[in-house]
Length: 299
Ligand SMILES: [Zn+2]
Image (cartoon, rainbow, N blue to C red; front, side):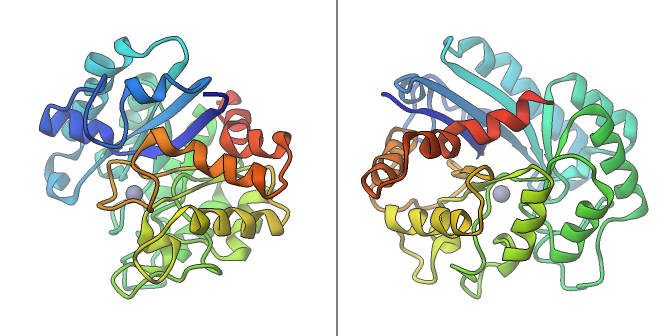
């Protein structure tokens, strides 16, 4: 396939570790057989720390990292690349843990999932005044120094603005959409999507937002299609965000997908549609992979 793709979020490592799925070929959203059909495919693999692992979070993080190195990375063909991220910093007990995760290849960290931890507060935190903790500020500074990008996708608003204040590197929202387009359903925290002001801050930092394919974050109907994805991309484009939008599908982390998008094999439809709508190849290449490539190259 003619496109190259850079996707900043999937939960496939959990399917491989917990359910013994093969990364080569499976019935999930992401596998090598389908990724390798693109010109180039870069997949950020998240080590998602489910709250059930709270008391052994560092072990869980290490097990997921090991899954990547032991059963995924050695199978990737030349045109498919994997990058590690952490979703939920519960396993970062100290800066030594953080540095060791860096040494093992982690380049993006979402400080929290939906709940609060000893670093920051997530989108479901009810105390709106709770943001980055004192330890969290040290974590962000050390991430900046090492070259690990802060991922704000699950943070509450206060933590978002704290990260923006304490980070001096490009900020990433690996899998979030535009709050102006979808304020989410009642069951989903509105903070999973970004305000225009937050997008402006990400843009100024030189960062990027990966569009999330979860129907609940695309519109209020809970059922979505390619046009919904396009609407979020176009909203960010209308804010001058051509260099700051990418893809963060959330594959294998979402229960349902937009109509017509069954997995990585269908991502091309988004770019075909943008082409049809008159966007230039240069613009489309930025969104499909070049924006995130630009940022991660500097890691
Ligand atoms: Zn997530």
